Length: 44
Image (cartoon, rainbow, N blue to C red; front, side, top):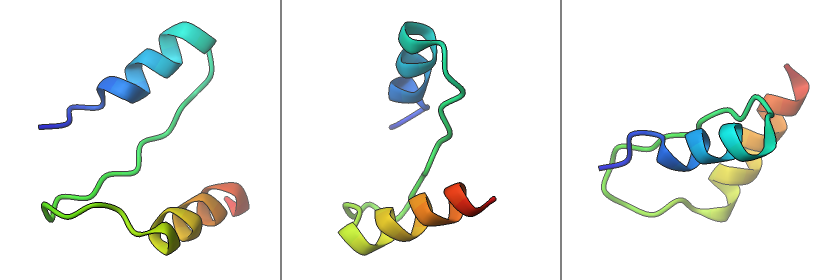
C-alpha cells in the first residue's frame, strides 16, 4: 500500500512541494495518464 512514501522522501531530501498522483485500481500507470496529470499540474 502506498501512503505517499516517495513524495515524503522527495519533500524531505529536496525541500520542494512534491504533489501526489495516486491510482487505486491495482493496475500500473499508463504513460498517457502520467503525461496528462503532469500537464494538468503544470497548467494550474
